[in-house]
Image 1 (cartoon, rainbow, N blue to C red):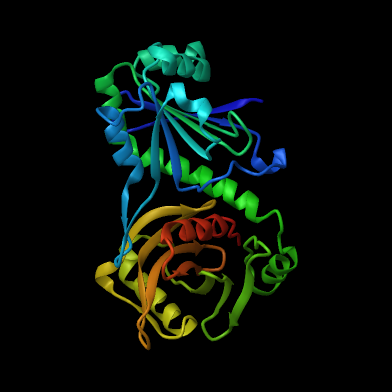
Image 2: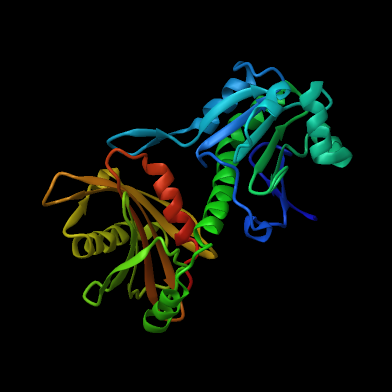
Length: 343
């Protein structure tokens, strides 16, 4: 198996983040990921004690997400010593945190990244390594390391969001592979032919609405409800950016009112950011929806993509309604499907 190395320079002076990807995917292995939740992270250190930079790593990985009516942790972290690793059931996500050439964990890091990697770490150039499907198919292993405890603590604090994103990307990739083992290719081809877009559809989902008045198409999975809507409209501007946030808010407000039985939003609970959806540059909108006719609501994530060939604004809207359920895993699933959107 060959590894692909990608380097990214970050805010830390001379800090380079290196990600090692194995080219084999879960689907190529034809096996299922290890049991357990994608929201769980097994953090392996030399001692297993939650102190010093280990405590900082736990805080960065857990990361509280505000869903308006309830806060959730992005990840649930279990900390163990490297000496107890063989006693654990295989986890979907493992993070190894420590220094090279120090202790048993250092030996593991040395084997994982090799002599060239160790040399680069000691020179202060490389700090984060990632392998998917390692050491077993469907498993993610991430190494976070540095040349000294002080520098490692700095890496953790400044690159925490980046590390979380690495794990989430791998989560969505594996989740998508699993969901699409049974795929509704008929609906995918029909949507492309009729509306000019496609999104890969697991058979667990179904087309719920096709509305010419919106216009839009909604696909859903129920119990609990996960909905993905694709809508479109003429867009006279030559692109879409954060400067369009007020107008984009109105676009999504109109969509929610018509498509979701008079749902509404609160402007103070909405935030915009620059992002990507699959291969497309997008403006992302995160917020909380409520129904104007009843007392219920939930979080949503909406992407706005500009189609320069058709002068069209595409809207890809992910909505969750799940009383009593954690919202983040459901949104993760919707995002894994939304990323397959193509025009």
